[in-house]
Image (tube, rainbow, N blue to C red; front, side):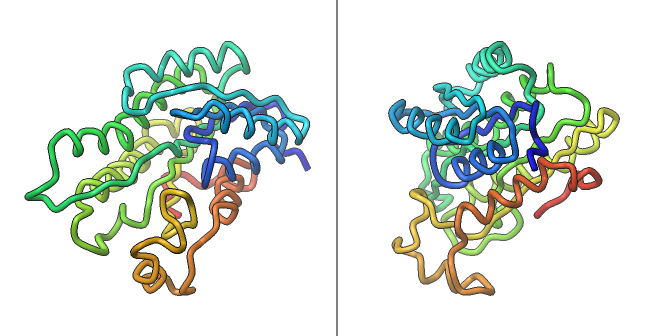
Length: 238
């Protein structure tokens, strides 16, 4: 059933991992899809072709999350091309770390700029024309609620910020029935966090199931939050 037919969804960082899987699930439910990418136009066009195979309209837009002040222009172009954005999936982000006595300020600023500032400016731009009843789904991290290891204070802080913004925006936007939730996955098998990575055994040990999750498992939750069955869920951490 095409429960999202007639709606436009924007998935930031939508060319791989959780972003690509989420875009596909939303497209499969009938939504028109805009994805953003930072570097590889070829990968973006491949993803657009995959989405178009579901008989929906899809487009890719180059966007630099490290320059959050530039993102409203990208949003304006998407709205011009595909119509008002009813579903926003703030997925673009970066992982990085360093001990507090060693991490450079410019690295701190880059992590916060991409993980928090870009999310903020994108959301503000989308809200200018988002219809009442829209959905905002922020992709956070389990590290946004607990610190599992040393050396990740800045990344953790960025994801704590995402969780805090989510809860506050849920209240800010309740009068418009715009629902805002955050998905905080544990270790997910992506290019940024491979199952066979340096700390993969440690990461698996933190999970009850003893394995990495897969992008499609997170995407299923994103699609649920975007759909009609989630009409009474807002300000939630999942």
